[in-house]
Length: 302
Image 1 (cartoon, rainbow, N blue to C red):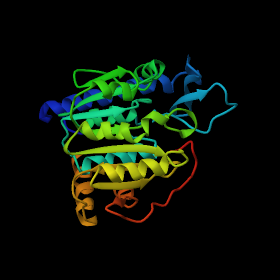
Image 2 (cartoon, rainbow, N blue to C red):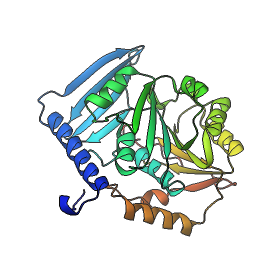
Image 3 (cartoon, rainbow, N blue to C red):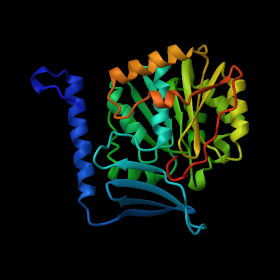
């Protein structure tokens, strides 16, 4: 939280305080609601739903052909909207070790917009392009989770592959977090030619961060493909059912260099959660490193 008085605050600090206040007002509205199911809309074979569970807002994408689900799309703490709740989103912040001051950031898969909102809040010099295939998910993110497009943050309703086929932008950071129900990424978003397209959209020394379900049929293939496309690949197993991969052409960094980068990020930004525990889970894959320990955990807390 910004503790500077208005008289001694920079324009960036003033904006961040106003943004945090806006997010808290939005969250308070839903915290005080008597309803527990706030939104439902059908999208293809799925129901998109937003529910309130105590002091937490949850986004679901429910397969209409399944009796139940053990997978959530997003969660937000109504008392602290900027404190990322899902373990994989916390882990994805490690991407800033390699690119601490990105200019242009791509996010494939919006969910509740929690990662986009947090990055947009802290990286005030960056612009963000968010691509989400399901219009009801965009509605949920903007109406309930407080994700607000502006001159620095745009949201496109499109299939991520279709968008990148047409887009010729070059990004400093690319985040891929494309899931439906049951923690499976659509097949066309895990194929080698799609990942090669992503590689082509990344600037020199840029980085791709990809969240992938441990039970995804393409898990081993994606790991192998990233190793073939990038000089350096790390894996960060989450506390739940996913692993985040970081892929770049930057050189492999020593543990001390990584720790120094994470410490600098913590000093520069108040992410409301520590980064060093995630750094301890980071393991090199390319150049060849040990197989990551996959923790299946609880799917509701990916």
